[in-house]
Image (cartoon, rainbow, N blue to C red):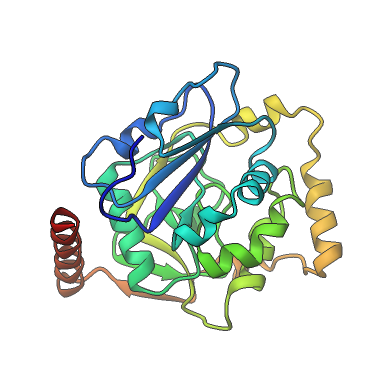
Length: 263
């Protein structure tokens, strides 16, 4: 696909199977992100026409992303923010544009969109709180994390250390929190829907995976403590969803679209 005239500063990197839901993410014309599809299925070039960057690669999500970004390191310098969703997440283009806009506006290093109330979920705290624009937290889940460039560079080596992803949510905040209590957040204003039961293709396609062993190795290597659920899974601050903030966000998106059309 030809590169857009306006340089998009956000990249979505998707490990996609045959039934990936990414079509809705790119359905609207004014998206503010490029899409890199790393396809793990068996049908050559499936989804290729949907993406600015495309490859076929077998294996579990996080080690394969580490391999891809090691193979294409220029992508890390080309973009400012990186989202790594599972392929069973449902969202609109507008939701994702606003998600990235809020990520940059609050200078976050690590974040995730909240999950809709009808999502399959593990932690209730990650479901949307409609009263909040975002909440500051001590962790994000491996299902849909967003990194800025600096955080990605710091955390990238860890991607290959847990094929299942277990333990990474405890490690990443320690590596890239920057000592700021407001650098990691759940973005409530832009919820996405997780549509399938947890695990899915990951364990079906990788039957020898040992999640608890992955987590144990990470804890031993990085001297991670077992999580205290009262602190790890509890927000320690929030920004309320007020009318002035809503208007500021809408105005920022309007200015972004005008610059894009003028480019």
